[in-house]
Image (cartoon, rainbow, N blue to C red; front, side, top):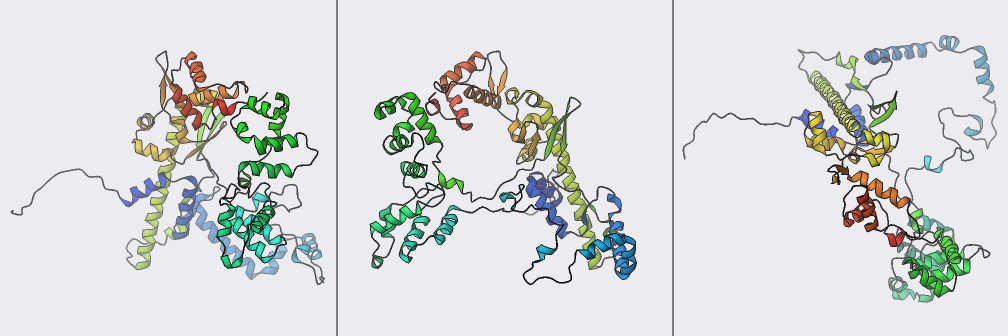
Length: 495
């Protein structure tokens, strides 16, 4: 095979670093974008946060402030005379006592003005405002174990029991397995394990360390006052007839317990005040926050969409550092500054491109789904990515990146941009109905149903067919499950 030179023409798309950065910023969520901006500010000296009052002269203002601070430091006496009055000086000196008691703390004399956090005795005190990370159930139970009076052997058994409790508060292992986990030389008897289990079951939250639902509910009922109405009947139901209650076989329950419907309703109401998952009270996950990227509001009878100004700060190039860059200088320092300046401009341009694209897509969604903003989810129209992509002149993949993990704040709540996209179902008039609108109708029908005779999936399908929406029963079941709505049998209640 002979080697030869061939001239060929063709087109090729090259992913430049600038394009890669723009795509990466486009698909970032708000929290990830804020972290990326902060990292860029820390690593690139050319980037700075612009001041809203005078962004163009931020560099000169910083220099002037530094010179002013140096001048005031060199002449403290003159600065004190110019900035403070005799009355203010007198008040300041009067707050400083000449002598302090031995057990006096700093907070007893000086009041800090930098912190606005209310004290624990204040009505504005909120425990969650000072704690970011949650505590898991095992840690909460071990803390109570350390306060309990037990022998070393019982404390060891209690530690193993606590380790065997799941996040829902139930004991995941049998007492036999817990006993077998100890060394035979320790001579741990089953009676000791059962006794320690009863001690652990007295810990908070009430109902923890139960072996089944019946025991969990009975532990909570035992803590109620003895004069609680229907307490004895509730204990009997939880101990002997809990399966019938789960199956909502109320007729069989009334026959077994020899009570009437009104009495059964009171007993069930008492049981429904209990927590079937006591461990879920102790939240071990950190709270997750949603920061909307765009805000939709109505002004002068017109819907307006705008970017959230709190999402990202306005960035600019530091004019003072940029002035140090020289064109003809090829030194290492000048090359570094030139590279940092170019990267800062690319980052600002990519950020602006992200904001413009996000605003375009949000505006098109607002125009297309105007019925949702005026009348609610029932007026939602079918919408796919291709329609928005055609309207803004972009590819569907770009629209998918824009609408992923981006949120819109509306008067009806905060929604992810993907919420406004849905498939369609044909109507009897030849039109189309959004699946989101059908879910909203199903939710409305279930909310208005008779609790004693809830609507079945077939009945809901018939009601939708009367409105011209042709949909199968299995589709109704799928939409109902996606909304977290139980079946008609499980929704049945006593009047």
